[in-house]
Length: 209
Image 1 (cartoon, rainbow, N blue to C red):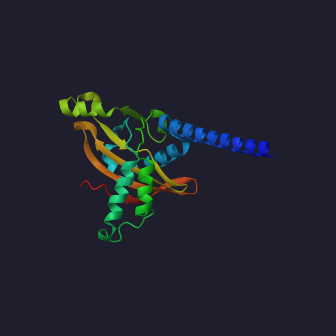
Image 2 (image 1 turned 180 degrees about the vertical axis):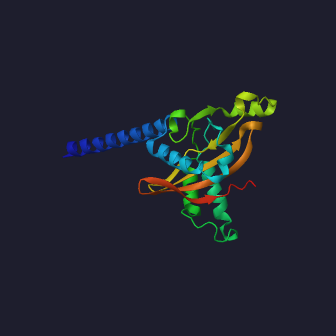
Image 3 (image 1 turned 45 degrees about the vertical axis):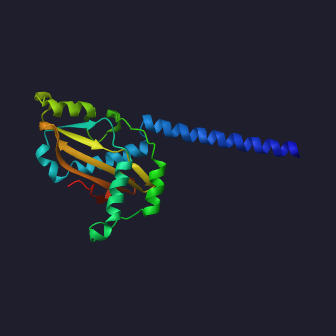
């Protein structure tokens, strides 16, 4: 009986070890390669966002994405900022899907998040080129815009912060790259899964006006 009990305990420990290893492997893989669900969220967002009226005058521009993704803590901070002052916003924002305790819990979970590096293969809704953040800073600092950097829209994008199977946050900023980076708009958006599509469901200011 004792041998059977011991074998059961060892099997349970082995099973837990395998689960933790698999969980860690999945986490590491997502650090290097974006999961399919996160790719879908990003591309569903860009497919709709970049067709809006405010981009009509940039129809001949190419898209560049800053290679270093904004961390998932960015959209969470934007949401927290809006939640903190929600009584001052009136009824303009109604999508309050997290309370202060849930915000803190997620903060703790993503505290040591690594920076994700976007790949051109992550983007299916637009054709884009990667641009390192330091390269952009160098261009702005030296004023070396030149013909090879004109007519381009530069996108800063966070990796999606998935809250549950139907809700995720993305932080987004886009600017005209003709003179370095002239911001067009910036915000955090709540993406909600409806059917097989992820759609914009709520917008949150990032506190930078």
